[in-house]
Every structure is written in structure tokens, then in C-alpha cells.
Amino acid sequence: MRIPKASDLWACVFAIGLAIGSAALGETDAVRIGRHFPHTSETPYSELGQVSAVLKQIGTDMQTFVTGFRGCPDIVTRDLNEGAPRDNFSDTWTIIQSYRVECWALLNFDPDMAVVKTGPEDRITPEMIHKIMAKARQLSQADPEWAKSLVTFSGGTITCKDNERCRLQSSDGGEWKDYFLYFDLLAVHSDDWFIEVTNAYWSQEGLVYGVWWRESPSGGRVMAVYPVMYWVTKDRRNATSWQREWR
Image 1: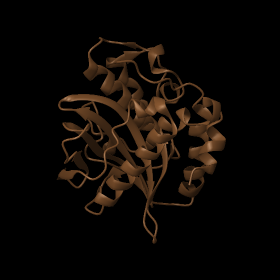
Image 2: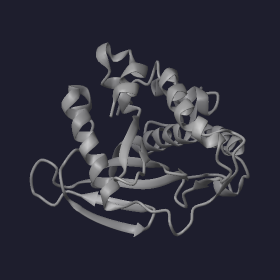
Image 3: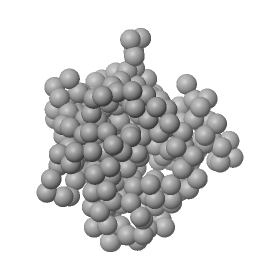
Image 4: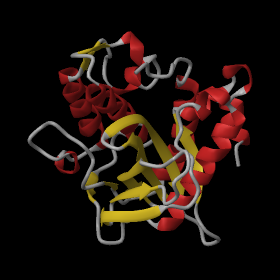
């Protein structure tokens, strides 16, 4: 499976970082790290003290699966095919994509912010899942390349292992039969939530992407998707302008 290009993304990451980072500076609470945030070190990322320490540890951990990237800022702005994976198994590609999404999520926060575990109030809701799917359908309709990669069925059955890990399965027998989507809560701060979404066909996992969700009194909404936003921009270049205008 070839991973979609992710070049020219630094402007996007920087713009999103400014949007969230400026708000985060005024907050005194910590970034809450999800219980299913994957890690290969012995210590959970939520116990590492600061965002900067988590980013550093992720940069170290990813070397087990892919070399050629100098930590989180590097992997989110470059084509994943420029790295050297440890093997050609599809599971390895899924893990590499997951590391990239996790890096993107945490790069949106001030590196000096504290990190802690999530609490009972942190959960993935059906509203989040349905609105994420609606945004995926919008992206798929806007770009034929992503229509080939995104799972975009409507409705479906939601089952959750706990508050922070859910699965959506198509409930009809159409073209999306036997397709699933997995939703994992990565990080929460104030009204901003970061969720990792994994497409799967039976046990075969495919595209992994990140979602920035923002809660509001009138109902939450998807603020951004990574790395999908790069591909649906005009001429596939002007990601920053498209990101500002996407509402």
C-alpha cells in the first residue's frame, strides 16, 4: 500500500498550531493524553510530564518501525515514502501512519504544557463520529483521490470498548459491507479534542488520519483533518488558505 504524499504540510501544521497554541497559552490546565494513545516505551506518554517529553519519546519510538525522519516535526511535513520502514507489511504502514497522526496532534500544543491522563469526562460521542463521517464524505466528494481511500458510509452501528475507543461498522449490505472505522481519543485540552481514525476492511487496516474536534455550546464540529486537507486544496498546494476558509 502506498501512503499518500504529505509534502508541503508545514504551513498547515504551523497555522493550526498558532490557532490552538495562542489559546493554550492562556490556559493553566494540562493536555490530557488518551488511555489508548499507542506507545512502545514502558512508561505511558501521559506520565512523561510535558508535551516536549512526549514528542521526544515518540520520535525515539518510531525508529523501531521507520527510519529517515528526525522526530515529529519532520515526519508530519514529509512524504512518508521518503522513510525506510522496517518491513513491507501493511501493519507496519498502519503504525507509521499512526505515529505521524500522533505527532501532528501534539505539535498543536505548547511544548512546555504539562500532560496528564484523561478523566471520566473525556469520551468519544456518537455526535463526533457522525460529524467526522460527514466531513469524510465532503472530502471524498471534493477530491477523487481521497474517494479511493476514505471509508464514507452513512449511519452504521457504533460499539465502544470504553469512553475513548469506538468502532463504526456499516449496517447495510452495500459497497461498504465489512468495512469498519476505529476512533481513538488521542488528546484533549479545553474544548479541543484530537481523534485518530483508522479505516479497515475486516482485519486489514488502511488509511490513518487525525481529526481536530472543537466543542461549542451550539454543538461541536470538525475543525481540521490531517493529512487530508493537503489533497483537497486548489492545485494541491495552497493548503493554508483552504484551511482558513474551511468552515
